Amino acid sequence: MIQVKLYRRPDPPVVEEVIGVIHSLQPEWFTEDVPEDTRRDLLFQDVICAEVDGRLRSFLVFTSWEGSISITLMGTHPDYRGIGLGTQLIHALFVHASELGFERVTLLTVPPDVKPQYEHTIKFYKQHGFSVVKRYSEIWGSGAIEMCKNL
Ligand SMILES: CC(C)(COP(=O)(O)OP(=O)(O)OC[C@H]1O[C@@H](n2cnc3c(N)ncnc32)[C@H](O)[C@@H]1OP(=O)(O)O)[C@@H](O)C(=O)NCCC(=O)NCCS
Image 1: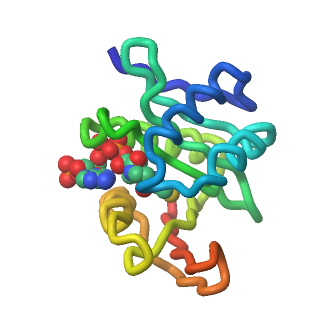
Image 2: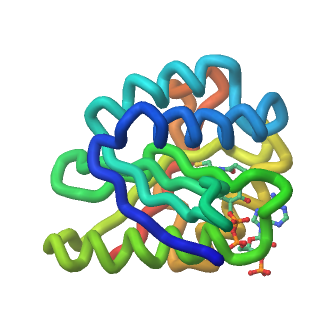
């Protein structure tokens, strides 16, 4: 059974489950600083999670920045990828953000010419209505792509 849940300022057990999914995506997807950065981010941010049979398998950390919802980090445990968990989470975010009166969702992600596997990630976001709006060369050492969707 799949359950989608919103945790505001999640408690430590939820944070540790999120960190567990992050570890499952290292080193291929996330650099070594991501678990600790996320632990700190979650002191001030919220997370929407998909639980499969009671275990957290996919997460979407988000916040608000300059009046828009910003996706800080998203990930699905590799054993559960491609079964629709990420899609359920991003739809839940769109509903939640719209209900709160937000009009835009933005995110930064890794350029595929830096890490080719991120081609899949960009395709995933494009399938959900995001467009690439800018490339920054100064962020994250090798640069970042900003994507945006109007709700
Ligand atoms: C991107 C991600 C969060 C999507 O979550 P998910 O639970 O796999 O999403 P879904 O099951 O809803 O998949 C949606 C589509 O994306 C495709 N997809 C996404 N990432 C993929 C990957 N790495 N490899 C193959 N296909 C991928 C799925 O096959 C599916 O395609 P379809 O709708 O045409 O069948 C997940 O794949 C992931 O954790 N990727 C690595 C980490 C990452 O890039 N995070 C985002 C950083 S900002």
